[in-house]
Every structure is written in structure tokens, then in C-alpha cells.
Length: 365
Image (cartoon, rainbow, N blue to C red):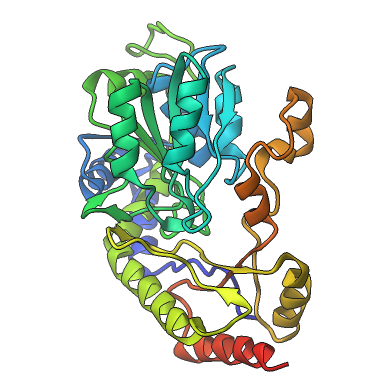
């Protein structure tokens, strides 16, 4: 079976993990600090706060942005549920905005409609879905006009760029995940980026029980610290990330060329001013054909994924909040059509050729 994800762990990761063991400093320490500085520099920001995972990164980012109970936070319903759950962690109110049918990211036109309708929106939480940056030019214009706090969910977009500037460096704060299937990993783990020294100080208190120093606790904090083990893996992974991104882009380009004339599917759309890093290679197919297509690929030894087959407000837990179906019609429609196929850098050319051959043969059935 050709898998959807296959994390690459090499000699450098093993060497650094052994150095952590030899140091006897297993919890947060110098490796975490080194990783924070390296990832912040890579992404073009002043500060990075490493922590336990992508979900905690989102929670921390919202708190750093000043989101309080009952605040309104506008976001997309077409994302992993952690994006919206993190708003609830702050006891704030998620307000959903529809997506662009081509990019699957927040539609700036629809966002402005929400900002005009909903008064006192505290923040907008955008998602750079599948590794494709949002339309940051339009979103930054709206931020300037409506004065909201901008939070980037870049959990799937390590190294992605909009007009040659990396995601995670546009907003007030940004959150990344280093889960095992991401473009780089620490097993679990995450990081929050910011250019604000004040927000950085506050974020560091949040992840460490609200400490102001060793024995003084001035705010409500959490135990969200990253370990030296995880950071050591991250240091090694970050050094290889650009090469892995190049491989993902190359694999996607091969697919695009092979599939561009197939009538039954649509390949990913890539705006001219964006660098898509292809955390997922996601195609669209008619909803009525999706199940059959997935079964066909599975039978032929190709794993697939559906990210995501339901908008968040249709999830069972969210029904109690009274969100109306058809709130975001495009997102609901897209969720019935998307399928992701393997694109990761562990794929061999034989793997890619098999995937292409199998899909083209389906077209001829």
C-alpha cells in the first residue's frame, strides 16, 4: 500500500536524540531554545514559542492576540476541528465565513461581508489549508480597514509563501503543528510565532504555568512546554525541510501534468503569487463518484484521505450552538468532493508512476 504519509527519520535525528539522552536534560532546555530561534528565523519572525502540539499552539496564539470570553472570532468551517475548538477554549464565539471554491481558503469577499455584518469582531483566524497560502494581500487590506487581530493557522503550511514572504509572518501571531504527518515533524509539537516582544513574554508565561519567574505566577497558565527530545528532532527536520518541500512541489507538478486533461477530476489551483508546499495534494471529483473512486484506489494499493468530509458546524458537538446548515454553501459543497492522494517526499518515481497509471486507467473505465 502506498501510504498517505511516511515520516523521514534519519541519522541526524538519532544523533541529536542521543545527545539529549547524554545531557540528562530531558525536559525543556537548550535544544528547545535553539529550535525556537531556528524556526522563527526560517519563517521571518522575531520570536518563536515551542509547545506541545498544533492545537495548543492555536490556543496560545488566540490568547496572545487578546481573545477573551464572548469575543467574536471569524474563521473557516473547512479545516481540522482544532482550528475552531481553540476558539471555544478561550470561551469566545466562532463566526464562520465561506471559502473560495478554487483555493479552499477563506474568501476575502465573503470575509468582508461578515465584517460588515458582525460588529466588534475581535480576531480573524485564517487557515493556509493543505499548504496553500491565503490571499494575504486582500486579507491585510481588510485588517487595516476593520482593525481586527489576525491569527494565522499555518499548521499545514511550513515554508509556504505569499509574494516571496513566508506564512506565519503576516499576522499578529501564527500557529504551526509538528505532528507526525506534517511536512516536518517532532512527533507531536507546535510553535507560535510573533514579532511582538510583549506577546512573546505573555506566551512564554502561558506555556509555563503562568510563571513570571521560578516561584511567582501572575496569570493563569498551562503546562504546554515542548521537550528537548522533540526539539532535537525538529532541529534536524528543519535543516531538511526546504529539500522536502522541493520534492513535494515536484511530485505535485508531475501529477498536474498527468491529470490536467482528465475530465472527471480537477487538480489543485495555485495562484501565481503563492508557493504551495503541498502538505496535501487534493483533487476534486463529483460527490456521487467519490466513494467508488476511493474504493478503486484502495483496491489498487493506493491510500487516500478526505480532509475534510464535513464542515465544522455540522459536527455533532457543534450542533448545540445552533449554526444553520448552508451557512457556508461553498465549503459544504467542497467537503463532498475532495480527495487527497500521496504526495510526500518518501514517494519513489515508481510509486508516482503507479498512482498516475491507476488514475488514468480509471478514466478509461
